[in-house]
Amino acid sequence: NEYLMKTVMRIVLATRTNILPLAPAALAKLAAILTEVSKNPSNPRFNHFMFEAIGALARFSCAAEGAALAQFEATLFPIFQGILQGDVVEFMPYLFQILAQLLSMHQGGTGLPEAYVSLLPPLLQPALWSAQGNIPALVRLLQSFLQVGGAQLAANGQLEPVLGVFQRLIASRTNDHHGFNLLLAITQFAPPAALKQYLKPILTLCLTRLQASRTAKFTRNFVHYAASVMCIGAQSGAGVDVFFDAMDSIQPNLMATLLSNVLLEAVPKVIGRVERKTTVVGFGLMVASPRFQSAPAYGPLTTAVLDQLATMLMDTAVKETKSQADASAAPASSEDAAAAAAASAVAADEDLDSLEVEASEYQASYAKLATLGDIKIDPCPQIVNPAAGLGQILRPVQDQISAAVQQLSADKRQFITSIVSN
Image (cartoon, rainbow, N blue to C red; front, side):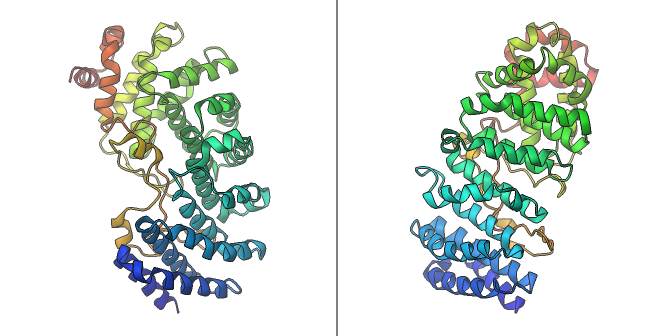
């Protein structure tokens, strides 16, 4: 009865942490139901409400009671193993999302628990990725692996197979944005030395795709990714050098050609609040870097870059959230650097209050659990306001860029001058 299961979900969402005294009994009952319906999944709406109830119960119980996480894992893992072994395809996306939720709760611990470490190799097998409905959930799960154990994966040589998944995803126009979501997690959570090692082949793959099969979606995602790399060590500008070193190793002054012919026109088209802020900060750091200003190939592009950044910041009509075809909405920024870098792994409370299957991303092949949410990656959490942040970045080099600013249109010249002087 889908209406009864929806009621169970609603009770968990309404009571939140007040469910704690009943949580063990509720978990046991939901686990028993899951075991039974996995033998013959016949009602998609019932199944969706059931997994939303499990996800909500885990969210509120584990946040309030540390010991609850181990209880959830001990209860659900054997059932999940049976679903995997039985190849219950209808439940695979849900299973991966619940695993991602539970794994993210280990953040701040001692690394990846052994149960998850042993799970990673099977998750990277091509057969799982051949099912389109699995892809968003598997990417979300790999993001959790990187969030909790990015350094551990790098030390164990497990980033390469993860990058193999990225290579597969960006080859597809349907899935390339999932590839960038995975790549952003690698950039955020893997050690900088590991990223530097793989950055040249990553960029080579992206440039090959840009040349062979460029789309507006792919280009704006690449612009956002390039900015994310340039935001590494934002105050030191180290990320700009890392990115330019990798690009120059492919072809000297390649970034100049790419900026002029492809990237600059896509800068104002980046979608999402944090994505747009990251783009402003990353390309602002690029303009302010000695490497950019001193190079004959790059210095003359200063006006063009500032023009596009001003266009982005002055455009108040632009969409602030991503479409379903390109990823989920971006989060608000946080002043706490550590918290924002690791980011929220759950949906906002107000989203849960009005949760409906029709309003969530429910489809026959993949239904996103609203109780899970996305890992929100913000590579420059210390900057809250993008315009003020750009002004702060450009202020030390205002003399060097003054001639370029004067070449802007009157309104954009006034805008850039204003944010630099404030």
